[in-house]
Picture (cartoon, one colour):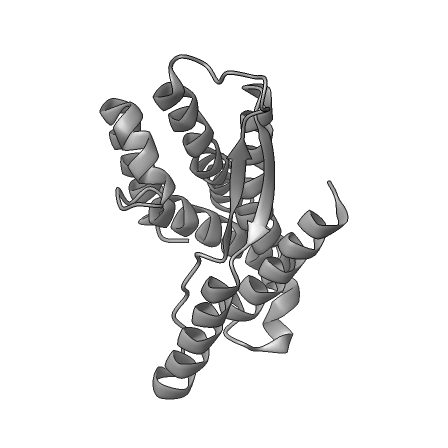
Length: 194
């Protein structure tokens, strides 16, 4: 990971940490694990799967998205008491080497790359949910796992909406069945009371 990618991920992480903690410093330690697993793992999954297919891949923040997220979050926090989360803060950019021709089935590889992020969120969210439901944890570890499950499953469901440029649009274009199963599982898991 180069310096710029680390800075871009860190900036996006800090913004999401503020939003998911509703701008409350005392909630940030609880939310930090959730944002790392939901956001950072999501983006790194896209990057690693893209690299597996032979692409150059790296995360870049989107400054307009960051500004919108902060403005929307602050405005809704002031007006309603709860920050509304706009989570389009950046993306993994994928390029092929000049002398490398991407796979002939680019739609398939792009679909799999797009699915990697939400699938990571579903797995992390499901594991956190299973631990919370299956093991009686004390307040702090239980709160951290509940938040981790909630944020991961919300992010998976949000990212699977079939709207460009979200992951769901790319997965749907590749394979309707996989998209339907993923969004259905993300939705159903996110509806389980924690």
